[in-house]
Amino acid sequence: MISRQYVSQVRLKVEEIAGFDRYPFCLPAVRHLSTLPLHPKVTFLVGENGSGKSTLLEAIAVAFGFNPEGGTKNFGFNTRASHSELHQYLRLVKGVKQPLDGFFLRAESFFNLATEIERLDQGALGPPVINSYGGKSLHEQSHGESFWSLVMHRFGGNGFYILDEPEAALSPQRQLALLSRIHQLANENSQFIIATHSPILMAYPDADVFHCSDAGLKRVHYEDTEHFQIMHDFVTNPQRMLDILLSS
Image 1: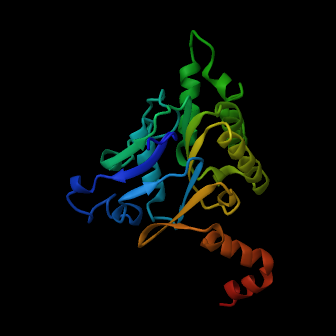
Image 2: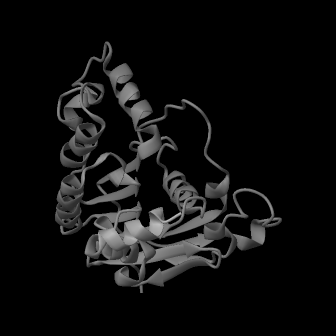
Image 3: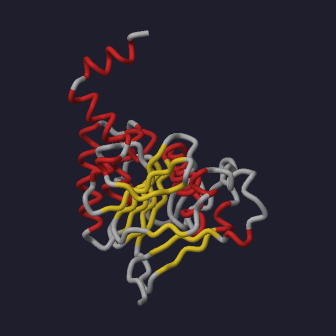
């Protein structure tokens, strides 16, 4: 049966990899990867720092055609070539539908993206690029406000969106608002892949959560994630957690 979602699976071309003892193939998210099935609406990648989830997410974005530093397929800037070769070893299983929109949001290089938008608008003959991002320079807003302008103005639905730690600049209240925005876009035929540490975001009910550990990627229930359990224990009894943490 032909899938109608934009990307249904991510497959690692294991037969083309010479060995798994070097970067990025030694990362847990890659070393044990064969096929990663994607949810039609939202797929979360969670896990500890260094597990390889962001490296895998970046490789998926590049394999799809996005600029490694973020943006749409139309962005071609290169501030520093820091992405791995992993995208060359991924096969994306696509459906019959093509997205009308798409974006790769990479928190750590969002400043570079904002700078590129300003460069493109200098002396531009057509409508300013920044109009698609709310009309106000992303550099003239706080980090959180510029993220929010992107999500609210640039994301138009019927899209394929890859987000790497979008909560990095957002308050808990804005994370809740982002959850609502993701739901709105998902109901407008959009598909998301999100790497996150936020227990607020990963609570989205119509999603698959994959936890990355030394054993690789495994689908888990939201309540079984360390993120939920630690936050739950802390909020339920903060004094007890503080006593344990500060006892030494």
